[in-house]
Length: 144
Ligand SMILES: [Zn+2]
Ligand SMILES: [Zn+2]
Image (tube, rainbow, N blue to C red):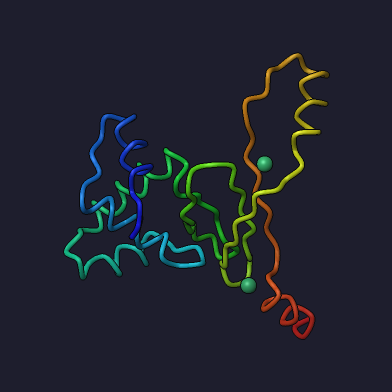
């Protein structure tokens, strides 16, 4: 069973409810292991009678909560990846849009250094790594 309690709680923080449409949008992005564009989500969710405008709004809302992370691909199209709350970072393939989560980042050392130098009290960070996945990397070598 999927647990949507974090989704409910985050939306509640914005004064919003977890509607079936918002849940469907989350399930769509969380159900694939790679980034998906707005148009792809709208096409897939049309079968669940969710209008493109509703999908776009839900994606905006979930992005503002940090639960969907956008990234513009080499073709200029922005694709989104679902990320559960917590200390999660993404590794994204610029070839096939595959996204892999990782949790270790070692940035606590850097945070302390930056704090000491700047006088800021650092509360968190965003980190996203991108490059070629094992399937796409060999293809680069052939095409060179
Ligand atoms: Zn790839
Ligand atoms: Zn980190």
